Length: 261
Image 1: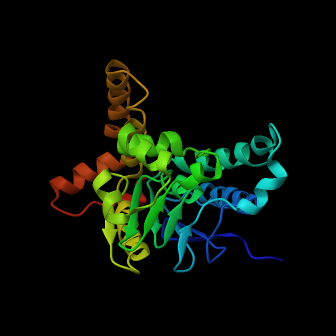
Image 2 (image 1 turned 90 degrees about the horizontal axis):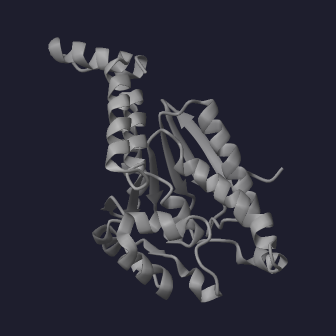
Image 3 (image 1 turned 180 degrees about the vertical axis):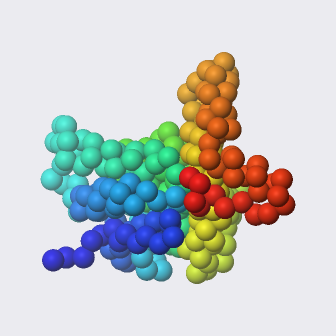
């Protein structure tokens, strides 16, 4: 049996999903299927934090497997054979209620960047280049790039990235707001695991509520957001984690949220 193109590991509440088809870790039909299986495992294990990374040193993910395209270039076929399922898998990653971190150690192009921006936090090594080069194939980012990247960097930067299709370096991506942190070569996954360890110790209920509220800010009015925030606050304040946090504060000790969530 061929190895999975997405490797899954789970330890101490942290799930690591590794795109594992080096050197380029391309998004293929098989990769989409393997990503779905890995996300099933994330839900089964009730992971507190999820990290997505890529195997090898050359690429996190260099985009779609273009060799699959010729069989899909009739009307309706690319959607039915590839994009509908690919978008569903990417949406599952984006909609996970727990914190997610992308650790980028190599080229992050096309569908690879579309996977990365499904995550809440992005860490890239300084040598990494990022691009949405689909326009050079006569197409455009079809799996969330047009809206997820735009939400991060704004329309002006998104248009520059997608209409020209040229790569940007990690420092530029950081200055645009596409990345959260730039680290030295070989440090992305280690840093992501440090962040994940910290987040895994945070109160699960409040992390989920906070993430959900932040994600809703572009879609709802201030009044709707206020109503949601009040309801979420009531849920957080009545949780076992809040009880633990307050008791720990009053007792001048470190709270243990891992057993109360």
